[in-house]
Image 1 (cartoon, rainbow, N blue to C red):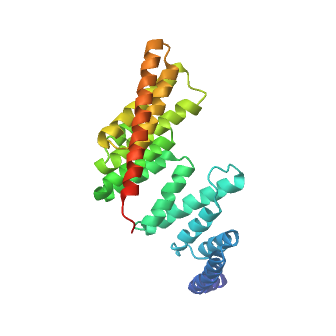
Image 2 (tube, rainbow, N blue to C red):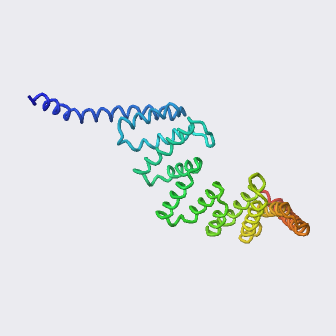
Image 3 (cartoon, one colour):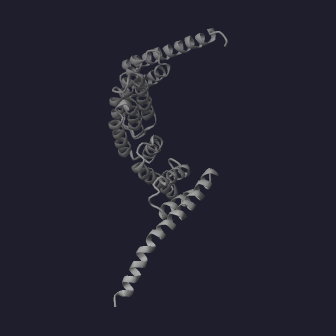
Length: 274
C-alpha cells in the first residue's frame, strides 16, 4: 500500500539535485541579463533581473552587490515618494546582505553608510562606524571625522563640537569650522528657535570657530564666519553697549580676512610663471 508513495518520494529526492542545478543555470542567465542592462545604464530593467537571479539561486550572494548598486542608481535622496522609498529599502537590504559574506568590501560599506545617512538612520550609521573603528583602529581619526559630519547633518551640533575636538590635528580645524558654519546657518534659518536657543547656538558657533582658528591661525573661511557669527551675536543681544562691542569684533575679523586674502593674492601674483 505504501510502495507508490515511497517510490514517488525517491523520485523527488533524486530530482532535487537536478532541479537545484537547473535553477543555478537559470539564475546565471538572469544575472547575465541584469549585467547587460546595468552596463547600458538601464537600471530599472537591471534591478528585477538581479532579484530574479537571487530568487533562483539564493547562494549567489555576490549578486546582492548588483541589486544594491542598481537600486542606488535609481534612488534620489530627499524624494519621499513611495517608489523612491522602496529603492532606499532595497539598496540598504542588499548592501547589508552582501556585506555578511563580503565584509572587506570597503566601497560597498561606504555606499551603505551613505544610504544610512541619506535615509536618516543615524543610529545605524554611527554603529557601523564604531564597528569599523574596532576593526581598523588605525583609521580612527578619519572615521571619527565622519561621525562629526553625521552629528552635524542630524542636527546634534553639541555632540559634533565635542567630538571635533578629539579628532586628529590635521582634521580638527576643518571639523570645528564645519560646526561653526552649521551653527550660524541654524541661527539664521531655523525659525523655531527662541531667543535663548539662538544665543546658545551663536555661542557654540563662536567657540567652535575660535578653536578652529587656534588650530589654524590663517584660516580665511573661519575668519569670515567668525565675523558673521559676531554679527549674529550682536543681533541677539539687547544690551546696546555689548551689541556695539560685538559689531566691532565682527569688523575686526572681517578686516583680518580681507587682509589675509590680499596677501594670498599678492603671493600668487609674485610666483614666477611655470
